[in-house]
Length: 162
Length: 420
Image 1 (spheres, rainbow over the protein chains, first blue to last red):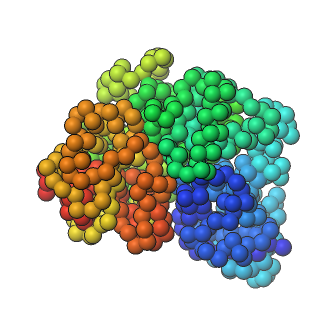
Image 2: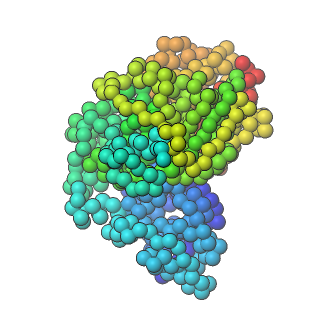
Image 3: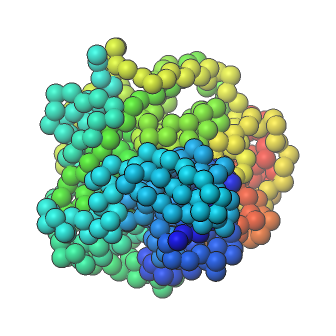
């Protein structure tokens, strides 16, 4: 079961996800210890394995730093649900095995702390707490496969296509 | 139906007659830009996967810039990884400290950017190079690793938006003001996933430096790329800067190319702009915020750290004294030397500014000018997000070099036209 951390905010940028003062390392666990620090100081303490972030428009805008995705992955975030995503973040997330869900209603239908279950293949979020279902356009199969393999390089290595 | 410049570049890079927006293509990469923050992780990924190779030692350009000279032990370790890798693979264009500079100023200056090419870099402001009629975009470290090893990446061909810049800029108004006005109108996600194509008479009089300021900030509207067509000004710059490889292909958008939207701007009506915290879309004319007290001025970065920017600032600062701490950061060693040769550094020194070595430094809150809580910085950089230049409770106000210089003298946001 995944717990939703809801931020009713647009334009949550990569500087908020991982401030540049921590970019002198690419150690995932160290980055994770500062994840979302400038937005929500308590996030790192409350986030648990396979949790979900829910936000508004343009999530991940700004820098191309993949450190933002590594910080989330290190913090064990499994999925980000937002109305829309900035494009570099979107690509980086898939490349690192983080699920991306574009949903216009999730932010209205999921409250902070709600428990959710997600069927990625069929595009369905079950909000267990509120007892409602939210459908979304699932990612294409090739992207789901990359995520399942743990990221692009893992996927490539597996297929030995390089 | 015709194609845009961007679509023609993708067709060429993918070996196709024609591409359409939304199509997925596997494109050949002409240049991969590498810097000190995002490339070391890419190198480690390749090493860990046992695919430690580079596709072409002449098509990868390496420069440390974000934390150079190394700001602490951890960044020194990043530099060491980058340096060891670049030497081991005998990367031909590796700019070591002393020749290293802010990547998006350095690559065009050193002749690595050619029209019609596909350029990627693991830095979001890689879109800068579109000023030369090239397709260029920022990517993450994983994509950079794939590009370094294979020289290919998949892309979704972006739809294009046309921005018509009519009229001409008034005195004291610069390309930075234009791009801030564009982003203020369409928002930080107004061009999400799109190619922003800039056309119109106001561009004709702009130098390549001024044009690069515009394409540099395409990402601040969420765009995949920004692009400006080739003209005499482009040709002249390339004639002066291209070195080893001087041939290139010029593409033009067809008259019947399809644009998702066309936005017209009357540049004659644009005033000096200030993007208020904490989004680059927060632009308002200086008249609405003049007089707000500042603590620091920062003139530099890949947006406005070029020689033309320093000349504009020096002209205003000449014979004056700054009222707040003012940092001048020439973006490359060549610009740094030019600033000395042209006497600009003397002007900055006399005015009470501090001049640093080329670095991205404080623009991204790295080092060399970090803000304390509650401090406000008037800056020629590209982002004013929460905590961008330091403490989460500090603030950044984005402006042109002229507005930055005028504000430095008054110690508060000031209209540069008063001092011209």
